[in-house]
Length: 127
Image 1 (cartoon, one colour):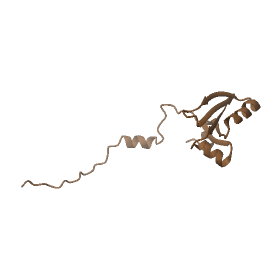
Image 2 (cartoon, rainbow, N blue to C red; image 1 turned 90 degrees about the vertical axis):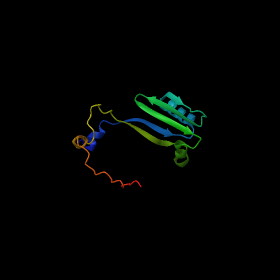
Image 3 (cartoon, rainbow, N blue to C red; image 1 turned 90 degrees about the horizontal axis):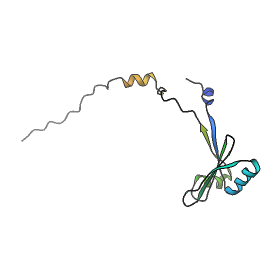
Image 4 (cartoon, one colour; image 1 turned 60 degrees about the horizontal axis):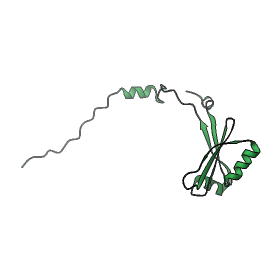
Protein backbone atom coordinates (compact mmCIF):
# COMPACT_ATOMS: atom_id res chain seq x y z
CA UNK A 1 0.00 0.00 0.00
CA UNK A 2 1.23 3.49 -0.84
CA UNK A 3 2.04 5.75 2.05
CA UNK A 4 0.11 9.01 2.26
CA UNK A 5 2.98 11.21 1.03
CA UNK A 6 3.50 9.03 -2.05
CA UNK A 7 -0.22 9.01 -2.87
CA UNK A 8 -0.23 12.82 -3.04
CA UNK A 9 2.61 12.93 -5.58
CA UNK A 10 0.24 12.09 -8.46
CA UNK A 11 -2.23 14.86 -7.60
CA UNK A 12 -2.24 18.37 -9.05
CA UNK A 13 -4.43 21.45 -8.80
CA UNK A 14 -6.77 21.46 -11.79
CA UNK A 15 -8.47 24.81 -11.18
CA UNK A 16 -9.32 27.36 -8.49
CA UNK A 17 -12.84 28.77 -8.43
CA UNK A 18 -13.37 32.28 -7.11
CA UNK A 19 -16.83 33.43 -6.06
CA UNK A 20 -17.10 37.11 -6.96
CA UNK A 21 -19.69 39.84 -6.45
CA UNK A 22 -18.91 41.70 -9.71
CA UNK A 23 -17.49 39.47 -12.43
CA UNK A 24 -16.55 42.33 -14.80
CA UNK A 25 -14.48 44.04 -12.08
CA UNK A 26 -12.67 40.76 -11.27
CA UNK A 27 -12.08 40.11 -14.99
CA UNK A 28 -10.52 43.52 -15.47
CA UNK A 29 -8.27 43.05 -12.43
CA UNK A 30 -7.03 39.61 -13.53
CA UNK A 31 -6.84 40.19 -17.31
CA UNK A 32 -5.43 43.73 -17.31
CA UNK A 33 -3.41 43.48 -14.12
CA UNK A 34 -2.04 39.92 -14.29
CA UNK A 35 -2.22 38.94 -17.96
CA UNK A 36 -4.86 36.18 -17.71
CA UNK A 37 -6.82 35.39 -20.87
CA UNK A 38 -10.51 34.52 -21.12
CA UNK A 39 -10.78 30.87 -22.22
CA UNK A 40 -14.53 30.32 -21.93
CA UNK A 41 -17.75 31.96 -20.73
CA UNK A 42 -20.95 30.41 -19.46
CA UNK A 43 -24.29 32.05 -18.82
CA UNK A 44 -27.18 29.63 -18.23
CA UNK A 45 -30.69 30.53 -19.39
CA UNK A 46 -31.95 33.44 -17.34
CA UNK A 47 -28.42 34.77 -16.81
CA UNK A 48 -28.61 34.97 -13.01
CA UNK A 49 -25.33 33.01 -12.64
CA UNK A 50 -22.31 33.66 -14.83
CA UNK A 51 -18.96 31.88 -14.97
CA UNK A 52 -15.78 32.76 -16.81
CA UNK A 53 -12.74 30.50 -17.18
CA UNK A 54 -9.46 32.42 -17.19
CA UNK A 55 -6.10 30.96 -17.90
CA UNK A 56 -2.42 31.70 -18.00
CA UNK A 57 -0.15 28.83 -18.98
CA UNK A 58 -1.23 25.84 -16.91
CA UNK A 59 -3.18 28.00 -14.43
CA UNK A 60 -6.99 27.88 -14.63
CA UNK A 61 -9.20 30.21 -12.63
CA UNK A 62 -12.97 29.98 -12.70
CA UNK A 63 -14.84 33.13 -11.72
CA UNK A 64 -18.49 32.71 -10.71
CA UNK A 65 -20.99 35.48 -10.00
CA UNK A 66 -24.62 34.89 -9.07
CA UNK A 67 -27.63 36.99 -8.22
CA UNK A 68 -29.85 34.00 -7.38
CA UNK A 69 -29.93 31.31 -4.69
CA UNK A 70 -26.53 29.82 -5.52
CA UNK A 71 -23.44 28.84 -3.47
CA UNK A 72 -21.38 31.63 -5.10
CA UNK A 73 -23.85 34.27 -3.94
CA UNK A 74 -24.04 32.82 -0.43
CA UNK A 75 -20.23 32.81 -0.25
CA UNK A 76 -19.79 36.44 -1.35
CA UNK A 77 -22.55 37.64 0.96
CA UNK A 78 -20.84 35.98 3.91
CA UNK A 79 -17.14 36.42 3.09
CA UNK A 80 -16.82 38.85 0.14
CA UNK A 81 -14.88 37.68 -2.96
CA UNK A 82 -12.64 34.67 -2.44
CA UNK A 83 -11.72 31.06 -3.11
CA UNK A 84 -14.86 28.93 -3.24
CA UNK A 85 -13.50 25.67 -4.64
CA UNK A 86 -10.22 23.99 -5.52
CA UNK A 87 -10.35 21.21 -8.11
CA UNK A 88 -7.79 18.42 -7.68
CA UNK A 89 -6.63 16.38 -10.68
CA UNK A 90 -5.84 12.74 -10.00
CA UNK A 91 -4.54 10.14 -12.43
CA UNK A 92 -6.99 7.72 -14.00
CA UNK A 93 -6.31 4.23 -12.66
CA UNK A 94 -5.44 1.60 -15.27
CA UNK A 95 -8.41 -0.44 -16.45
CA UNK A 96 -6.87 -3.67 -15.21
CA UNK A 97 -6.17 -2.41 -11.69
CA UNK A 98 -7.23 -4.79 -8.93
CA UNK A 99 -10.24 -4.02 -6.81
CA UNK A 100 -9.45 -2.38 -3.49
CA UNK A 101 -10.31 -5.55 -1.57
CA UNK A 102 -7.90 -7.66 -3.64
CA UNK A 103 -7.59 -11.27 -2.49
CA UNK A 104 -10.40 -10.99 0.06
CA UNK A 105 -12.81 -10.00 -2.69
CA UNK A 106 -11.67 -12.85 -4.94
CA UNK A 107 -12.16 -15.41 -2.15
CA UNK A 108 -15.67 -14.24 -1.36
CA UNK A 109 -16.66 -13.99 -5.03
CA UNK A 110 -15.71 -17.64 -5.62
CA UNK A 111 -17.49 -18.94 -2.56
CA UNK A 112 -20.97 -20.47 -2.71
CA UNK A 113 -23.65 -18.79 -0.66
CA UNK A 114 -24.24 -20.43 2.70
CA UNK A 115 -26.99 -23.04 2.93
CA UNK A 116 -30.13 -21.60 4.40
CA UNK A 117 -33.22 -23.44 5.40
CA UNK A 118 -36.34 -22.32 3.65
CA UNK A 119 -39.07 -20.82 5.74
CA UNK A 120 -41.85 -23.28 6.43
CA UNK A 121 -45.19 -22.56 4.94
CA UNK A 122 -48.16 -23.23 7.08
CA UNK A 123 -49.97 -26.31 5.91
CA UNK A 124 -53.33 -25.69 4.42
CA UNK A 125 -55.90 -28.43 4.33
CA UNK A 126 -58.84 -28.55 2.02
CA UNK A 127 -62.23 -28.92 3.58
